[in-house]
Length: 198
Image (cartoon, rainbow, N blue to C red; front, side, top):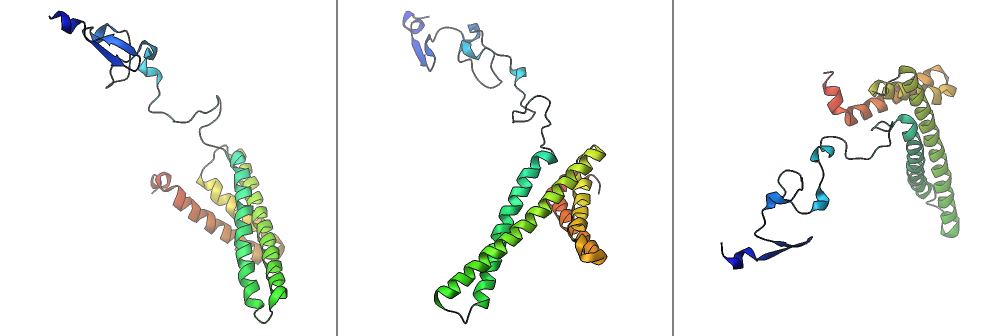
């Protein structure tokens, strides 16, 4: 071997190295397909869990969030969505019913429609979400499992309780609406899990 070739030096991010040195002499264990770069990468790749979850979960906690954790998101999201939908509905109603008014009287009346309808719808949606979340959490605790049956059952019970002041027919109609909406949600969100039952 030529003396010039043995003194050739290469450059890496971790400092200069002699190009004639064998790569096998460096005591570095890296993942498959990568070359040895630095003694700081001296680790056993089996400690890397490449097949498991990509999230850091506190010890003892399930990887999936429970109903109690999701309850606050559900209630808050329902109130915000109800406020937006109610405000848009109030705006439409206000514009339609104040055609014969002009100026600041019309503007004030439209704002009243928007505020009243937005607050009413937000309150109703928040109440429904609260009943649904508490019912779903209770069913999960009683059954000891969180699955699609809990979702549909809590939807039916929520409709029944929310419309209970409208009499028996109104309560049953509300329960059917709750079962229908939650069944549609389950069909759209859990296609993979439902295919095992079909």
